[in-house]
Length: 133
Image (cartoon, rainbow, N blue to C red; front, side):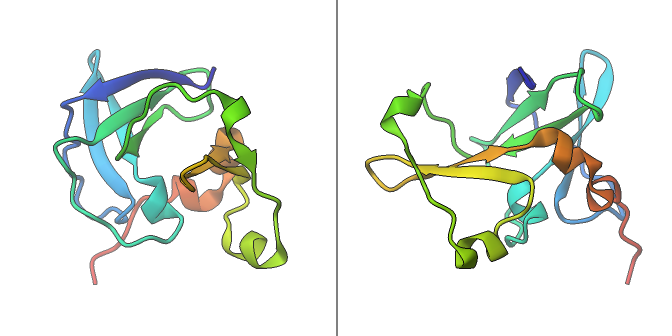
């Protein structure tokens, strides 16, 4: 598994001069963990932290110890109830390379498989610094 734990009630402490997708740091067992907003990293507009947001703590076995902002949680989903979305050239050109597959459920909700190792290998993922304008 590439995940370790979901942290509720943790609000990342903002870090000055970082990119909008770097939400800040949380303290987990006396270790500072950077929190990433993958939606913003992929190009979405930043939104403020909400009271229902969670931090999905990624496994320490991965190359980078960090957490991902989770804005919605659902119960466990049986993959047999999901339909794979066949990639089209239009969809593929807008989808980041670290998203390996897309699924939808009966209600049209989309789910994405993320290759965390490929994501963490991107130089842009490591470059959290943003110089003041």
